[in-house]
Amino acid sequence: MARGLAVTALVVGVTRVSVPQADAAGAPANAESSTGALQPGRSLGRLGPLTDLIIQRLRVSDDVAASKFGTGSPIDDPAREQQVLEQVRNQAGDLGLDPVSATAFFQDQITASKVVQKGLFTRWAAHPEEAPTTRPDLGQIRTRLDQLTADLLRELKATVRLRAEPTACTVQLAVAAGSGAALERLDALHRQALTGAVHSVCAAHVN
Image (cartoon, rainbow, N blue to C red; front, side, top):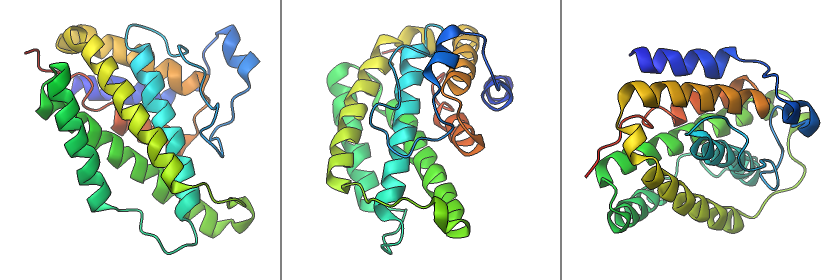
């Protein structure tokens, strides 16, 4: 409970971090496209690289929403979700990760993505002038998501011992999530999604 409150407070409450790259980057609150939206290695701390990848996946959710908006395609896609989770279970086993905790982490990523998509659908329906004017190719987006799945799993493996230490993980996650949200200038919707996406980061099992 304390861990969740600490991370939520920093993700939601931090609005600006005094780091030179933050002002130089001039990153938008929510990018229209995930392409080039994130420069690697920006979030602080030992969980910074993992947090960068989580934020990048959230950015891709913007493109998923843009590809579906106005087409009648549902946000929920149970078949695709099960495909992703089965892929995660298989790859986690190959990497020596606990499949249960890895699957829980990626279930959080899927849920966070849907938070972004639903929020953007609501925003665009209320303000049609803000709706995307191009429709990204969903096949290309899924290829990008598959690559991010592999990258995230490797980073989960690299941080498995840290994430199994509750106190150290909580502190490092708060630093990474808070700095990442501020440096990327995430808007309220994406900060809410980030809070959910990092929920299982500190629930690692060391085999």
